[in-house]
Image (cartoon, rainbow, N blue to C red; front, side, top):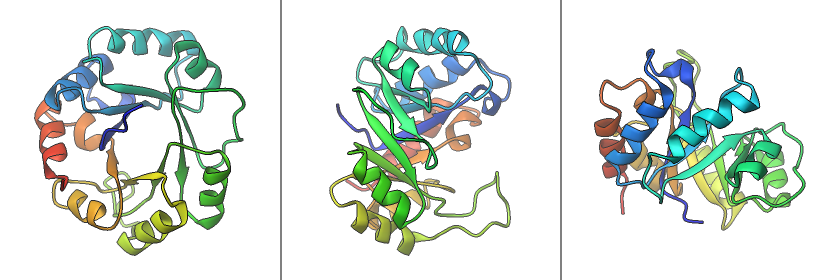
Amino acid sequence: MILHRLMLIADQRGTNGRPLPDVIVRAANGVGGRLMVQFRERELSDAELIAVIRAVQRRVPPQTVLMVNNRPDLARAMEIGLHLPAAAESPGGQYALVGRSVHDESEAEIALGDDVDYAIVGTIFETESHPGQVGAGLEHLSAMRDLLGNVACYGIGGMTIETAPAAIEAGAWGVAVRSAILSADDPSEAAYRLHSSLPA
């Protein structure tokens, strides 16, 4: 499965009241479908989340890659990717795509043991959701990238059109964002500008 370089962490709480499928579709269309979408809905039941994902599947370009956070059974049933938080147990079974969140060396080893397709490394820069909390920085991103070898790394935390290029230069394959797209007045334009900022 193709790993696009821009990942959207998607949940209904971040959309300023707009339907989540509408925001995701606009973002995906803004980059011609070259978008990874991770559904991180902690409050919805499986049935409710399946309905949201199906609403998105019907409308996004076919190359858009969908995954779900920490719901292995749902990922298998819908034949979409699975993202695992750092503390999650290793899943059994086969998935369209598997990724993990990684913050330190021990978590990188767990990710390698799971033979993940990608890892999300963070938190790199200070974020609006955690003001005053200093990010781990680009040197940390580079160190995790070296530990993870051939695993594609996505930098997360404070990724903007100004900071995202530096994450790529530090070794990341791509960047993951939430509010930068979900809360944007124009999710299509926000996704396009972020994607366009990433060095070739």
